[in-house]
Length: 256
Image 1 (cartoon, rainbow, N blue to C red):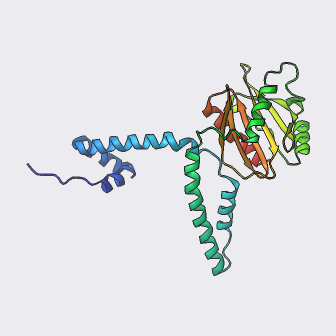
Image 2 (image 1 turned 180 degrees about the vertical axis):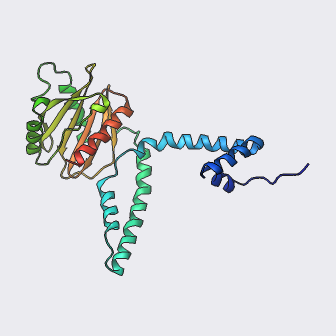
Image 3 (image 1 turned 60 degrees about the horizontal axis):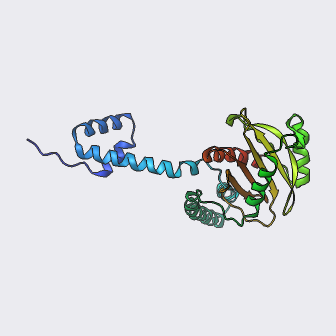
């Protein structure tokens, strides 16, 4: 009987992430080697845990300040000094990304209670979501006027995100008060009468932020600050649904 040399982890990783031929070789090895099967099972569990922890973060939009760094790093090189600056920018982005990833992984924590934006967005939701006769001022049937009016009052171009993919249709919106002046509130409703609100306000003195989670009672949502705008999506929905809707809203507002 011939002793078989143990298969090292480096070889297994190369086979595990290779093409069909290497995957077939790995399957054959796993069929005859208990140690290989055990290590693959352990790695599969680790991969599943990482996907559960970081998967939702992967879907979140890249903050503008990070996109700006990428854009500057991709600009045509004109001098040796520029190359040094570009290398520094990329290194800075990697450092920020590392810290950002840690912060993003902590998204599950409730936003600070002192957050003015989150507090006002929650109060606005609670005030208007229960209204039967007058939850909005301008209906979705006049969407162009609604978006133009809200943009003018905010002094910043905004858009009404299309949330049909999640079963929510725009009802309309209204101007509401905010600590920094006028704010916009757009309301959406699904076929069973559930409502969500998108709150948008100027945040001229606010620092850009990643997505933050907030909740009060049954109302919960995500909020963020970018380009001097503070935004929040609030509703009584599963957290992951609100996260997905918030990402869609972020994309629509960024491209407005």
